[in-house]
Image (tube, rainbow, N blue to C red; front, side, top):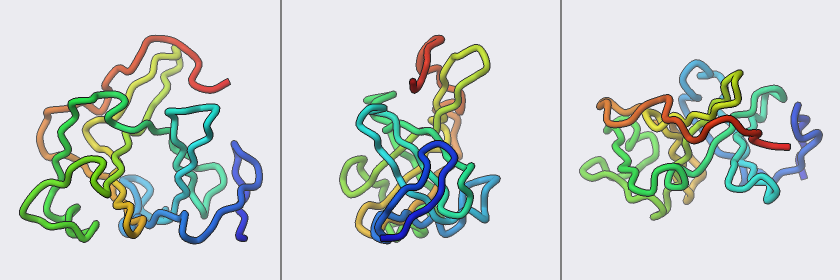
Length: 152
């Protein structure tokens, strides 16, 4: 079984079928095209997106419906094509689609979620994209909670 070193989790074993492919990378990290989605039970509902090529690069995320149960996904035709989804309709969350909000923790301990550009993963082939919305319905700094520790 392959293994990668990580800054936050030590050496991590994984299966090739666990790797999520981001054909275009993530905005500002275009060269990073392969990530593991790690969901340690002790940190639930937190999810970690660990880069396979950069041990120090790990994004904190949460399922978007945990943050906003009424969230409406809106993807561009280009993003739908990248995920090989029909371009004539928007996908339903949970119907073969995982939607994660990237989390930022400010110096003061406040936590915000990026609802403007969720990470969308098609579970059938583990293909992903960060779907930047073209509208301004949601914020990239949606306040999740006040000060607290994310992980101990």
